[in-house]
Length: 419
Ligand code: ZN
Ligand code: ZN
Image 1 (spheres, rainbow, N blue to C red):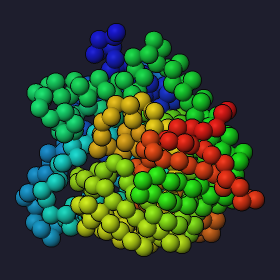
Image 2: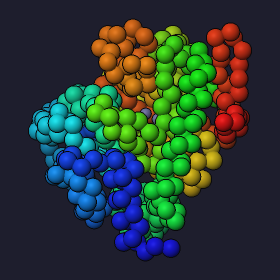
Image 3: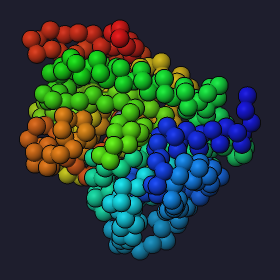
Image 4: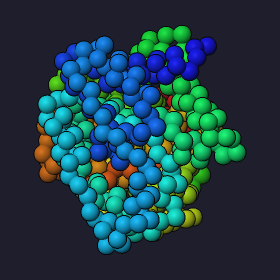
């Protein structure tokens, strides 16, 4: 078993080689203003190792945009109440400088889910929406895969404390690193080879589904009876994508999902979450959404309903689906039995759908479509993209073919077709 320093180094290597597949001559920006994630100060030891591996891979320059979570809380405690739409443009402008050159982007997703729990939710919402609006041009680069980008995680104190209450702070962070190394396959004899095999299997699943071109998916489970129409020409994607500049990369570490494009007007029925949703520094517990004609027409939440209504009311597309994803219940993340309060990890533990923006690369030739053309084929547009978990060991998924027959895709949360 490698020691901590070796594990952290292997993880940094996976980030550079498997996640980003950083190419000689590229620059690397760590911590972009997308996914609400500048690089947390506590992740500095990891970021330094990433920089070493990046330069070894031929990077010309590694730059970092740091952030300190505590400063967010200080703002909510001390800033004038009418100032929460205030937002500087330089982080977005700075990140765009990299994106326009075709440089790589690493986002480190590691937040204390309770950071803003006790703050005024309307102000939290205002800050979130302002950030989304300003970062829209960066989201555009990322969703078109214009550059090779990656979201990976790191153990930081506030988050570790939430996951492992009752341990002393140092042990909490160490425990979270152990879990992250485990689910990122860092302790396999050859982690890079293990990831190459895993990604090949995911690609084989998505190839099978692409061949089928189902007209809809039917998802059933406790509290869920949902039909999600799929536009003709939808493309199933998985761990491996190719950037517009031709670099093959893995945008999420870890990744366990295959996902595609729902038709924004063809979701019908009711869906109930199986895990809480961590959103805007808050946790929205179990909720149900009813869809008609693709749009949310009824909202029910055990708590956090105001925040959920705020999210869905962001714009016209925030009440429609932009992603549907399948993840076996036996995935290593699901096996931990932990709720991570972090979308990168939790979305890879269960079947999920996302409210808001769809990815153009989940439609054939979608990257070349204008927003209007993408909307015309059924692609949803919104300032937000928020995944929530609906899968469990009790969920069945079927594919509906053009001639009206159904084929089993998942039974009791596990794949039900052979490759
Ligand atoms: Zn997903
Ligand atoms: Zn998503």
